[in-house]
Image (cartoon, rainbow, N blue to C red; front, side):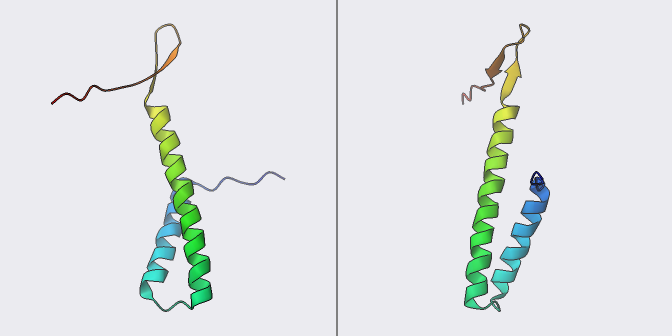
Length: 76
């Protein structure tokens, strides 16, 4: 059976929950290490998802159907 993909929002909510638990400071060391490791994994997955979304958004489709990178010239 294929592994079901967890939504970005669910990962972000879980990350926030872990951070709150760790900030309270009443987690034993072994549990804190496990939670921290899981939080770092979630943070990496969320970051990668955001980067992929940004790359997709920054692409445009030309009239000929060719996909190009969208770039904005930032001149001050």
